[in-house]
Amino acid sequence: MDRELLRAFVAVAETEGFSAAANMLNRTQSAVSLQIKRLEERVGATLFFRTSRAVALTEKGARLLPFARQLLHLEEQARASIAPEPLREVIRFGLTEEHATAYLPHILNVMARAHPGAQIRIVCGISSGLVQAFQDGKLDLVLAVRHQPIQTGRILGVEPMLWVAKEDFEAPPHAPLPLVLNPEGCIFRAHALAAIGGAGRTWREPYVSGSPTGVNVAVQSGLALTIKTPRSVPDGCVDIGDRLGLPQLGLAEIEMHVSPAHIGDAFQTLVQEVDQVCREGTGPFPDIHGAS
Image 1 (cartoon, rainbow, N blue to C red):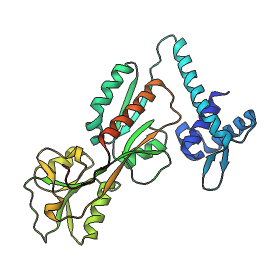
Image 2 (cartoon, helix red, strand yellow):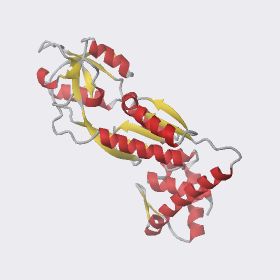
Image 3 (cartoon, one colour):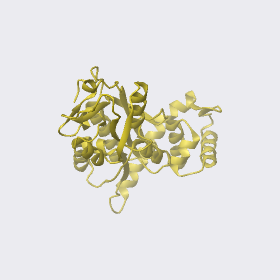
Image 4 (tube, rainbow, N blue to C red):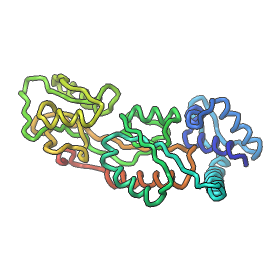
C-alpha cells in the first residue's frame, strides 16, 4: 500500500477530521480527501462515515487502522536500517514552562539513554498557543492544560488549582485583591477572574506575565497572589485560599496531543514517557485546599 495514503488514513482516523489531518500533514483538505478516496478505491471498501459534523471509522476502517500503523512503523524501521548514515529522528515537543520544570529532567534522561541519536526540539509556551501550533502542524507532541475539548486531546490526569501567595501575605478584607496572572488566553486566569467575580470580590492586576518566573517573583515578594497547581507552588509560598476566604477553583485537566503523522521509535518512547510521568504526577485530589 502507498505510504502517503496510509499516513493520510491514520491522520484522519486519529483526528476524526479532514481539516485537522490536513494541518498535521501540511496538505490541503481537498488533497487529503483525495488520498482517502484513492485508498478506499484500492482496498475496495469505505473506510469512513462522513457527515457535516463528524468523521468516523467504518467497521472495515477500524480493522485496517492497526495494520496501517504497523506498516508505517515497519517502513520507518526499514528505511533506517539501510540508510548510509543513521537517520536522526527530529521531534517537536511543546509544553508549558511549569510542566517542563516538573517533568523534563526525567523525560530527557530517559530519551538520552534510549535514543541518543534523536533530536528533541523543545518549545515552551502557554497551553492555548501550544495546542494551536499542534493543530497547525508545527508541533508533533504537546502537553498542555485543557482549555476546551479538542478531538486530539487525551486526558492524562487532573490537578487542583490553588490560590497561592507568600506565607505571610495579608490582604485587607474590602480592598481589591492584587493578582499576578498570565495574559488573556490562559485557563488559570479565566478560572481566577470568574471565581472572584462570582464571589463578589474586586481585584486589580499590578502585574501580568506570560513567564512563570515573572509571576513567581511578584508572588514570592508578597506583592500579589496567583493561581498554581501543587507541584508548581514556589518556595516560601502556600495555598492561601481558605485563610482569605476565597472561592474554590476546581480542577485543571492535563492533556496530551500526539501527531498521528509522526512515526518513529524515539517518538513512541517519548509519548510513552510523557504519558507515564504525567499520570504519576497528576490524579484525583479530593482535598484541593489541603495540598501545597
